[in-house]
Image (cartoon, rainbow, N blue to C red):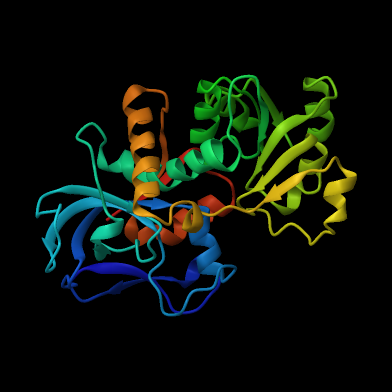
Length: 323
């Protein structure tokens, strides 16, 4: 009988319980996947805590890589033995699970399972942030908070390869060099430095075209003060807590700014959008444009320990669970 991590009540890491589950049988349009590596993301923490509430009980986790064990009726394009990956589907913290074939991606031979599980959700997030939410290009200067974190590791490298000047922030001295290796031309420890003053200094008072902010409470409203007039604040997470409510007139007073809260659910809603983003990630990894290190690896049974490490900001790069 396979195992999974289940949540029966919202709360801290202690609510992540190791349980037996029945072996799933694929129905029409479904694929049974034996999972070999599972990605851990901050959205998993939001689901576990109830910040983004799910119907309970629930198996958390939303990305993994693995091997097809069986396919349901009417499934084409996948067969037993295929290496596959997915993102954005709740139920990932399990040894086996069912995945809709329409949301499953074939893994190229050159991408190993651990890299796929570590990079797919973060990579497609970085893709729509940089290529669609605000299209980063040569000559732009951007600020990326949590530049040594999961999405930051990928996005800062990618933005630098596009010709942008990347200013990264980190929350500890130990992450400064990591952010530099991720492509940041300038790195700020926002816990010991005034990041707004430093950004103004770096840009000669001009500010940046875009701020990518997954920190939330601790970096607001400072993120807005780093922007040029007509700049864009891209809020895509809140690891320190939700930013406080604010009046729309604040955007006017600070320079006719734009603010957006993008999610994969909307940017990758169509199969073609998902395939385009995933292909771009896999190609960038294969070409060496993106270099990804799995910073921490935990057994699936130790998911609570992985969450504690993530929430304490003791991790850099990607974190995975291994069944």
